[in-house]
Length: 199
Image 1 (tube, one colour):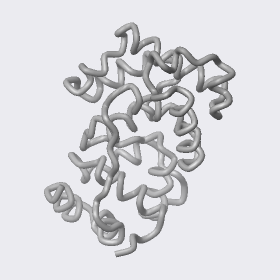
Image 2: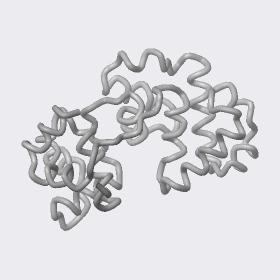
Image 3: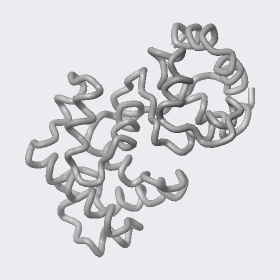
Image 4: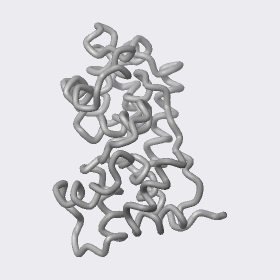
């Protein structure tokens, strides 16, 4: 991680400031398995606290979030956990893909980022944002820029003095100096939305 931080500090003065104010890099990873991708679906377009509570209820209802356990639950049980009808459908579709081998979680770590995006976006309800979260927080890929993430767009707007939320092309231009450590830079951008770390 020292190599990543040294690179980001030297490449971008804004990132150097964010690293100083953000404190120690402390990303929390999840195992690259079905549970992590299901969690990303639950977290789509929700406040983190609310999404975490829904996922906890889902885990309790399932007795562990696995494809088999999730498929045993009926739609009303999924809605009782707090899932919308649409997200319940997405989770069931992912569970079917995983159960039938159409999504092979054991193979994903050996695939490159773009191949993973192409494979996982075949599942209903999984778009680029969900795959980007899985790449960063489960597969631990170091150079992912989630251009569709509202938090990242907001943080870039704030930190780089933009008038409006940046579009993907502008985000790619700003992020070019971060390569190959865009995921680390994004963690500090997310962190900046919480305010300075307590040191």
